[in-house]
Amino acid sequence: MTTVSSQSLAPAYSAKGLCRIVGVACVAGFIFDVLALVFPPALGNIEWRIALFQQISDRSIILLFGLALLMYGSLETRRLRKRLAIACLILGVLFNLACVLVIRDGLAFQERAVNTISAQASTLQNQIQAVQPGSKQGNVKVTPEDIQKASQALAQQADSLKQNTKTGIVKTSISSIGNLVIVGVALIGLGQYGTRSPKP
Image (cartoon, rainbow, N blue to C red; front, top):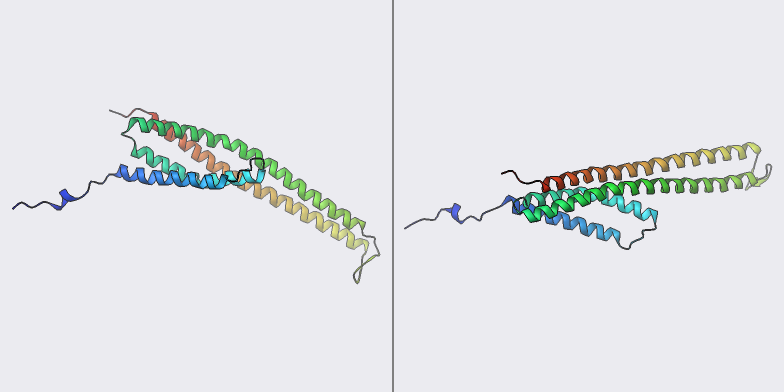
């Protein structure tokens, strides 16, 4: 009676097959995330565009990882490898071009936010200056020194708020641009790798 070894009954596992499964899951997850972020579209809204690009840049590493796994899983299939390589090249260029839009929107949003703060501070300054010295606010008599202190405090708070707003917008823009550039360059590299002819 012959015995069958347990090794011959074991299924043949393929690392490339597993990479294709995980790669498809990563790319599909990225696409669903982006579709959820895009709807409802508000292309004319600068805040919407900034938030969209920030979310895309935060999730872009998943796309890169998924495409790299798909590329590895399809190295033996020339046609699929070439298509993935072209998709990677196009996406890499688009990610790098998106940085220009992120910079433009960041600068425009910063200018608008600073102008809004300045306008509100100016309105409050006018209200402070309209208070007559010697008038009563509740039980307190207002002196010229009180008006001067309130005016200076408001100016300091407005300057601080402008600086914090600028810093926050710059940090967000740099983070988004950094992720988009890094992933864009990596996608271009991945695309170039996929277009090369395999070594004999």
